[in-house]
Amino acid sequence: MKKMGSFLFLSSFIFLLFNPGLTQENLPSGVVLNSVENMYSHPSSEVDVVSQALIGTTIKILKTQNDKAGATWYYIETPDTYHGWIEGRAIRLYKPGEKSYASEGQVIEITSLMAYIYASPDVTKQKPLTMAPISTVLEIGKYEGRWGEVTLPSGQKGYIQVGDGQIKQAPFKRPRLSPEEMVALAKRFLGLPYFWGGTSPLGLDCSGYVQLIYRLSGLEILRDADIQFTQSGLLEVPKGQERAGDLVFFGQKGISHVGMMINEREFINATTHEKPIVQIGNLYDEYWQKIYQGCRRPK
Image (tube, rainbow, N blue to C red; front, side):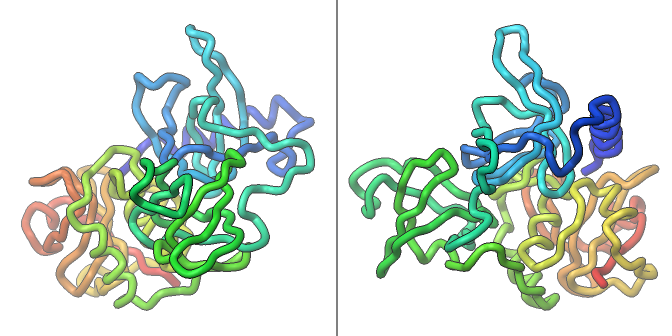
């Protein structure tokens, strides 16, 4: 997926340039309240989605604007330095001196594709309060047996099934997975729908998908396919030497698509080619060879 990452980075730089009292360290910040929130190219829900932010994510606020209806929008930066507009109702602003959500103490990292949070420790009494996608980190208090009590970013209490995640002490660093483990992880997403700008199991685009797989594998890379190719610090791999865990890039003129190799010939990707789902393709099929641009490997 190729979007407008360079433009958004430049606009953030200009904003800071003309607001010299602000720095990346003291920008106002907040936390995402809902399961999955779209980030838009402009302050409107009627334009293209550039990415998404997940519940519990701490974001920096670069700019505030009201739309014609008077609703507040924030121009934000996510932890991976990506920028976009998000509806104000989706964010809780931190109070001065407040520590970032789930930045210390006991937390649960969601490892199921999706985990439901309930008002009581029972799946039958009420509908879930909310849902937390894989990779989400939530504050958790007491836990015993099947259930644990979580505090959501809104401050609301709820209950999660402990089997949906791993309990850790924040801050933590995800362990680096082997290529074989990365492949097994990536295959868990097979058949999930393609969604332009998507970063969760509710819908994924190509670069959002490989970024998520790499993040869960202990590797942080940037958001869009073109900047993953040139700016993520990955090693160039000669054509014909691709192997499991490598990223392969495609496009007619520039980089517009990315997938991850699962063996020496096949790769897994979120694509609209033939079916709009996460699927396995053959790198040596004529379709992919015509638009093949290169391969990159983690150091």
